[in-house]
Every structure is written in structure tokens, then in C-alpha cells.
Image 1 (tube, helix red, strand yellow):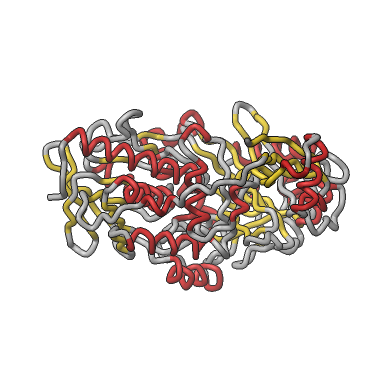
Image 2 (tube, helix red, strand yellow; image 1 turned 30 degrees about the vertical axis):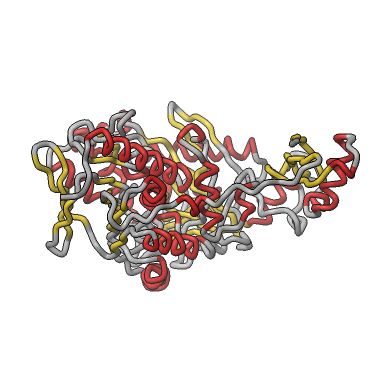
Length: 526
């Protein structure tokens, strides 16, 4: 028999399995000999108490031993001769769709404009050190997508999307730490995630799938209202009757290609703003009560939100013990994001601090139609680039100066490797964005006293929070309503936000493709 019990324990107890077992036996009033095993199934930090405590949910095995579930990998099929599913994009949506294809018995054939995870490192160094942006290999494009080198946070509010545990277990089976199965806010880290992603690639190839890197898709071939293949940049065509578009939120060329072909796409609300970086010890002091946090405490984080004049203002992709990184996908843009290594041991904490952008905010761009949000996004990124002297140096202000509307006389240290320069960031951003951020920051300081400090720096711009375009799909079949065999998936299609939700969307879409293939009687690509 298995029972569950909740415990609230000290940091030291939570770090010692023997102490956890003893605490469980005492609270449950159980005979020690009846407790064959105790497993922690959920763990979170309660920072409200002083000192902080750890909240645990434990499974108690009474007079029986735990039984391990068979590995998901053991259920995969060899698919060398199976019907093909063409997947455009090797990010989390594309890769987890491919893994699901192996479980179903379909052959995934992936095409990604970027390079594999190892080769991408050279291009990331070129961005960081020399300000050189490769449009096809950067922090957004390449094996594993944007998540590979931007933290690897694995939590989502979208629990209704699918089986989150299946994604987490697959990550563990490919080398991720098993802690992600337990932690309330699981995290892998940008130093470990690339190897996990490469292991997933090896699995896909081992079971008969194909992956083609540095292979840009330039067109979707359509005949009589149905897809029949892909046109690749090298002039080659690849036939196929089932195509999954999992290209990510920054594949602007895909959006334009669809529009030019008369395939419906839609404007989608998103958010735009800045990155705000604090010293990590300051955030620890606010959240834990001490700048010198306990060795067993993780770097503290926060989540803040408010409404200002009808707009949401909120923190986004908070990276405790993290770094700010340059994530432009074309020369002539300044775009920033955040990442953390597995230990989260950087002396800095950063978070996107952004304002919602809706159709009503873009009156001057309505002539751009569905591209209104994308055009606004792009112009802000280009304006910030033009304010500098070239490269990926980013404009910045101390946080109080951003609120006061004055250029900082000097800037605090920052994790942003390309460097920052003092600039009137409050004026470079659209006025309504700046005003909402200024009001929002004051509200955040009321909720987190000490947040508004001259030790904090504002860096622009955080603009790739989600896709500014949605590619419509039927809610049941997940197929585009106008094109048979075209399945929009993940962040780029406007149906996910982050690694976990994108992965689940990929899995669900692979199942939908399988159902469609069975219903249509389709057997092989032709």
C-alpha cells in the first residue's frame, strides 16, 4: 500500500533521506518496520518563513517496495520504413514530436536552418565576443531551439496541454538530473541541456528518424489544397504528405512565406520591454532575509505582475544566478534574453520585465495587417541597435534613472558579455511602453521592498517573449483549416510558451498526425 504525506521541514532535514524517513514515520505514526521505502515526489521552498523551510510531499510504501515504471525509450519502434512526418524545426516542439512519432510508429524527418548544438557554440561566441549575428545559427535557431542555451526552465501553467510527466521523464532518460521530476520549479541549466538535446538526437537517429541541420526550408509545396512536400534552400525538394511547422517565435521568413502563398495567419498579442538585473545577494536578502544565503538554499527568484492602464506589466523568464545574453536573429537588432547554468551561481539575477502588446496599441501599424505586431517588434529592436555604435552592446540605465528619465552617469556591473553603455533607454522605447514599465516598477517595489535600487540595471530590449503571429489550426485535428496535411505547432505557431509547453504541444500534434494518417488511409510519402 502507498500513502502520501506532506511535510514542512528544515533545509538540513530536506537534504538527508534518513531524516526525511524519520520525519515521515513520526508524523504518520507508523511502525518503522512497516515502512519499506519513502520517496520525495514533490519539493518546493517556502521562503515566507524565517528561516526558509522546505515543503515536501512524500510517498510512503507500506510493506511493499517501489516498482519502477519501464523506460519510455523501451516502447519506441524502429521506423526506417514507416510513413514519414516532415518536421520543420528541431526545437522542443519538433524534437518531442519526433520522439512521439517513434512511440507511435511514424518516421520523423526533421529540417532545421541552424546547426547542431555543438557547432552552434562557435556562433554564440561570435555574437558574445564580436557582435556578429549569423541569421541561421544563434541563440534562437539551431538544435534544441531557443531553450538549449537559455536556461532550461521546465515549468508551465499550461498543465492541461498534455502529460508533463512524460516530457520530464524523457528528459531524465536522456541525461537530465532526476531532480526535475520532483522540484516545483524544475531547471536543467544551459551547461547541461545541450548534451541532453544531443542525446535526444541520437535516439531519433537510432530508431530510424532523420535530422538535417543547416537546411533551410524556403517553401511548402501544395497541390489541390494539400501539402506534398518541402522546398529546401539548396534547391532540393523533399516529398511528404504530413508537414509539421515547429519553427519557433523568431522565424519571420516562414510567416511571410505563408502569407505570400495565401495561407491564413493571424495577429497575436505578445509582450515587449526590458531586462532588469539585480545583484543576486540583494534578491536573496529580499526573499530569504539574508544576503549570505544558506548553502542548501537555491538562488532566490521572484514573479511580479500588475495592471497599468489596461496593460499587463510582468516579470518574464526570471533567471536567478543567471546571465543576460544577446538573442538577435539578424544583424542590426538588439534583443536580450536570460539564461542560467545548472548551479545558478552567477552573482546576478535578471528577469524580463515586459508590457502586453495588443492590437489596440498598434494603431500606427494597422496598415501592416497581420504583421502589425511583428513590424512594431522589429522597429524597436532596430532603433536600439541604431542608437549604439554597432555590435551587440546594449543601451542601459540604472533603475532609478530609468524612472526619473535621465541618463546614468555610470553603470553597475552586469553579466551581459557584449557590454552596455549609458543611454536614454526610457526615450528609446515607445513612450507608452516606458510609462507602463515605470509605473509597474514602482508597484513591484511595494510588493518587494528594495527592488527599486541603484544597484539594478535596465537593459533593452526584451522583445521575443512569444510569437507576434498565430498560425490557425483546427482545435481537434490540429491541422491548418485551409491546407490538408499542414500542422502548425509550438511557440512559432502561437500555441506554446517555453520548453515544456512546446514539447507537450509537439507530442499532442504527433498523435493528431497519426490519427489523421489512419483516417485518411495515407501509407507512405510520395
